[in-house]
Image (cartoon, one colour):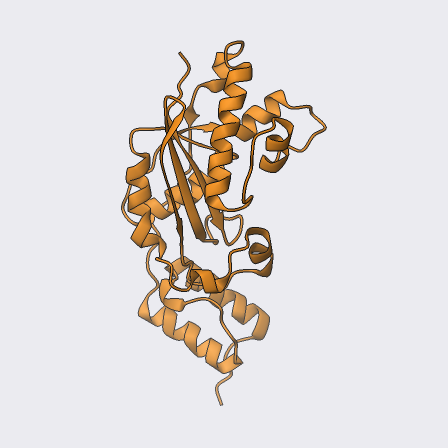
Length: 239
């Protein structure tokens, strides 16, 4: 019998790079023997202003996130929710990379196996067609409500997987076996007091309206931001 219990997950983020971008919404849909038994979704305050394109894509605004919990307050809940089950998503490596990075930063393990509906769509859909979640759901007549919102996308990925498994699973069971998700990351160290002071001095000197909360930044993030400001505006000139 094909594996049919998992947690469909989806994250919305400030961008595409788990090293520099942040989660703004998480959703998880738990399916046991193919049936949804529990689901959850949470907005997450990323500690920075959202890029305009992310607001337009997701419909999530800074106002919606200002009172949301930070990632440290919720990541343990989601790690526990997924415990003992593989995870599923459309391009699951993307969601796993953000979730694992958040987990590691809060001393949690998130080494998982997964199912990827994008990988399956590339195998079974016509080559010339887009394999985005929206296109795949339209092709297989799977409902997709509130696209680019985490819970809607997680629900759609679950329904898409069930449709694909029903159509192709008996003929090609090997395509529906979970695989190891590999993403290597180390815990980020908090920024030092001196790093934050230097950054604040640069911001004040150059009169920069910073859209990031400095207290939420790691050592590497402060270093990158400081280098970027110096490259763009120059160093502080002592008088």
